[in-house]
Image (cartoon, rainbow, N blue to C red; front, side):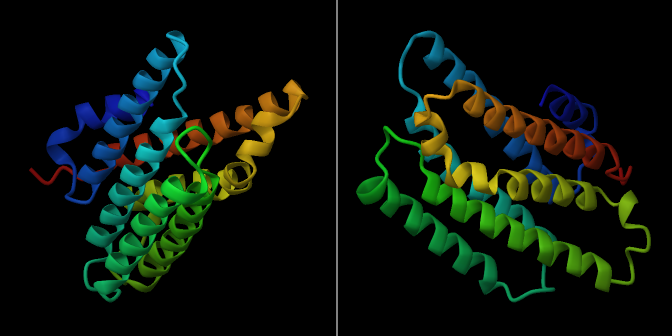
Length: 201
């Protein structure tokens, strides 16, 4: 996260419009990590933060894709996804999984939606003639980062409450260790993508 945030600061003058949503995503990640760490040190349960974080996180990601998709896909697509996800996330917290437990249903749905958006993003890039070398395009790496993280974490998010309740600590540590590796890979991809934003100014 420090690497991707550092690149965002260095390249802030050259970031394309859609990449500014990624900066917002990075700032959200930083605030979430700091606040959860502080609450943990104070021995205050912090799972409630994940309910709020998940809601804001998906909205930022969806707006990033909406900006990049432009008119390639129907404009109502992202609006529908946002409406469905936000409604479900709130319903989940109020009636299914309270603030005291991991919001596995909302995290699982978010992962599936982001995976779908990532695939749509790759399709757009492959069909557009103006992107001849996708590996030099910032959005290619940002999208790759999202796909790696959410596809890799999907099963973990769904089974998170089971992993937390397991008496076998090694299984839990292994699961969250894998999650940390995916988190690192995502931020490395973000750092590369932000660095490749062209010098348009």
